[in-house]
Length: 201
Length: 137
Image 1: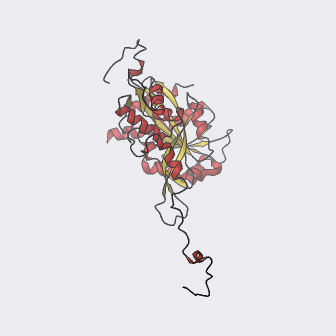
Image 2 (image 1 turned 135 degrees about the vertical axis):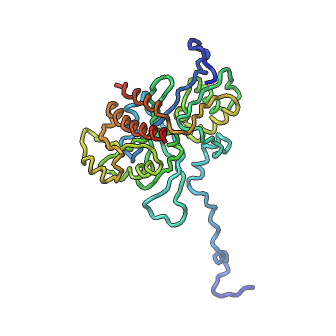
């Protein structure tokens, strides 16, 4: 830090060092509860920003062309102030089953991702799982239970998603802060494992 | 004079090739470009190290006068540090536009942009996030 503003000076408040931002991505198909998840834990009402995304169409006939297009998507986000030097941001991004987003911009520096799954439309989250696996980003799958009901048991979900055994699959309720917090803690546990591995190597 | 009996002479243009179709610009071309009018048409000048969560604060003592309305709004908004995502959401600017304007305002000395390295966060930072979240009730 180049300077240390005096803490009692309001006039110099703007020069106070801002918090270090860290972020977790909340990904999933349309209507699975991403915004609810972000809103349950955020200290501000979720905000929306529009951003460009490169998409690669998958699973559809693509006669000619590279299959990559740029589109504008709406992203919901919120934040949790850990302390005055550290702030956690949560970015909720869509992931329709027909498209694989190129989230390279978004995941740069991210701690990890929570992939939100609705068991009645499980294939909606395939692109997100694929992408985070390939990118080596720590992630966990959160099965949104909607009213405490879980349509399938977690082994069936794991089988349907075909994720590695070390990817945690946790049931949670996107409406409740404690439940979202616990799901995020599972993601952070994965992130910690990665960070420790990186330090050792 | 042509005396081809098959072709009536009244509407000879019917024999000609079909009129050229208007140039293909694609339905989304205008929609994509329009937000970038604010950035004088630049869409690619953004600094890739400026991310959604990058913190931005106004330099002390700078005057937002003589700036364009969007730039002035950013300078006024960032008297308290704010992320680029929040700037984009609060001013209803496309994130790509907000990122370019923030880069411009850094170049002109109006903003301090706190770019972090791209490295994966260290274990100590993650542990602090974990204990911070655990403390939430």
